[in-house]
Amino acid sequence: MLRVEHLKVGSLPALSFSVSDGECLAVEGPPGSGKTRILRAIADLDPIDAQLFLDGVERREMSAADWRKAVRYAAAEPGWWSDTPRDSFPNISSLEARVFRLLAAVGLDEDVLERPISMLSTGERQRIALVRALADEPKVLLLDEPTGALDVGSAALVEELLRFQLLAGRSILIASHDPAMIGRLSHARLQLAPTERPARSTRMPPP
Image (cartoon, rainbow, N blue to C red; front, side):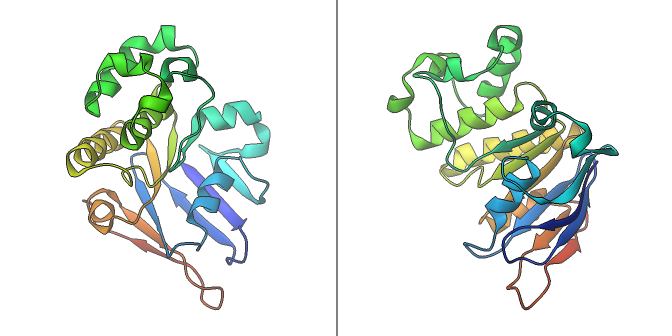
């Protein structure tokens, strides 16, 4: 379980919430409301004022590397540090079979890893980045617009993969402008509001 206590991001009121194993929390709000900043803060990518717990262990009791391995952030516009996707996967030799299965699950062939990143479409890069985030099986996924650049067919494959991750017991926080996907995947919603009104957390019936 991921538990967040008194998270202060920008001008938002302090936020406290939890996401159980196998549960999806949707973070909703208008552009600029702080959705991405919340995900980045939980991933320990930006300085924050909060207490974060993973299975009862506080973030500061873990190394930054261990926290980020267990609590994985996938950006809407993924970053790359190599010419081809293969070299962006840490320890890919030991994870190759899993990586190939994940690529197939999102409709990509194995050879996409060898193609120059500059030659890949935005949707291909986004799907490869999701596979990269899942490759070493993190406990928590923090997903920023995971289907924002995808066509209907590719988005359906990604959604099905995320549903499988929930069944496997992973926790997911998702920021998306796709209300239909949120309705199908989420168990709860965190609705960000203007500063004069508090954010609201709403529990949803099981999808």
